Image (cartoon, rainbow, N blue to C red):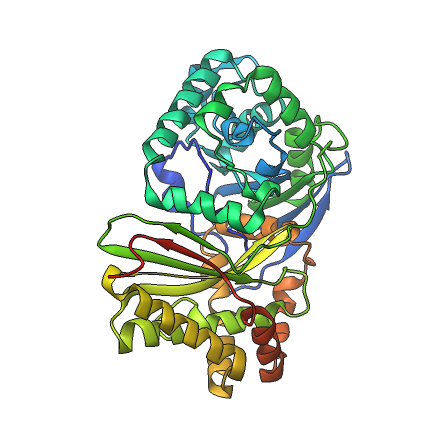
Length: 442
């Protein structure tokens, strides 16, 4: 399961229409043949050689993310992601972006709490020239003062625009409530004050600390052989330092049971209940994943959707999701409801959560959940060459084996009702952290 970013990403993307029309990727009818490639510099990456379309997609992740931002300089990693296409090597911002546009290539960077991500998509005939640009961006970003000031101004403007946004305020309060002094509680996008303290030396130091050969996961998809992939990997990443210099991040201790209330006079009240989750490497992961699907997962058949929306008409949307990070795991239930119905919605959600903890799932619910989770994987993760490359990287980020996709079905089918009930009781018994945005009473 790919972890998905919650906040703080800014991607600079140049789109060429031919690439979009070719981005269909590997045929879903065929099983993926994933090769583990090791370059001459000892860097490993995963490759899916696909000759059906003339497009190459490369994705990579760098361990670290916003948790590596020094205290008082929150927003550093986020600012960095906006600067990789703002000049590199001997190309200033205008020259770099003009060249990228000429090649019709897409390039983007983003950051989450735990890692920085980069990707590039290009026509195969322009591969070498496009990858030369990516290599420059990764190895030799200029971090020119003019570009730093311009991107910082954009970020500060966005932050100031959101300062009075109830959801932004609530999110920050909830993170502080749940994570306390852990780095996950800090604002990864920074603040106007912290962004103002960041200079070029800070960016150079952070780049050197994170961008290292032992701190990268790579996925390549397209008409590329294993030997070519090894050469590509060294071209882009071979000149980086051998070892990263990351500060250690401790496991987060969740502070649940409290409440964050942002009391705004709004016609709609947003509710979120945060429970413990399970880490991706936990033996109970798939039991929790299937339980969550039945409780409030995607689609129109979950218990929460049925009880909160269909039967009572209390909300338009309601659902639950597992939130997975390197040092934390939670399960969040959220909805938006009329302010006059907030307490009734909250009571209904709590009732369904308690029912799940008490009774678990039925055999039919479990079978339907398994069918959906197995069948939807290809659609969600292999719809294009970029999706496949991102999946390859995600599997490596989660420390899953190269044959995971082949084994996944059997792992899901092996989950029993007893296992689901046990994990439901473990996760849903504790009192959750509660977030209320808007009037809590009508």
